[in-house]
Image 1 (spheres, rainbow, N blue to C red):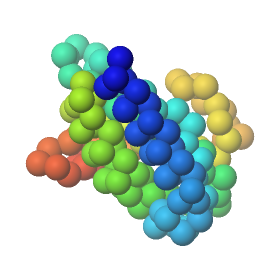
Image 2: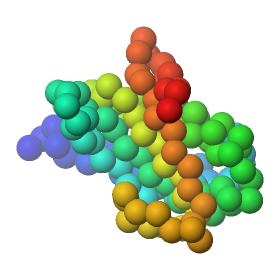
Image 3: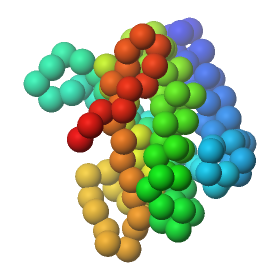
Length: 130
């Protein structure tokens, strides 16, 4: 599928962009490595949510405020862009930063991780109150 090839090339460029951005690109200055990007149906709706998971080795030491600024940046720079892909329009974006990769939906007391959920409206990421 020609469109699929373009999307794969674009996704590859996105992943390289986030990785190549490393230290300094995000507000905290910590290096980030993309871990998982997925679109899922939101339970009880016909809307999609985009899930972006990234490894941020210093997230535990930097704390919540630094993690929140980084998650806001990821939503604004990558969540909005990915949601704009054909057939990728998402109603919300979930950003997960973790210092060590773990399977989605699991917890580990030895792994620092933070989550933020954003509604997408008018070309902006609006942090949801959870």
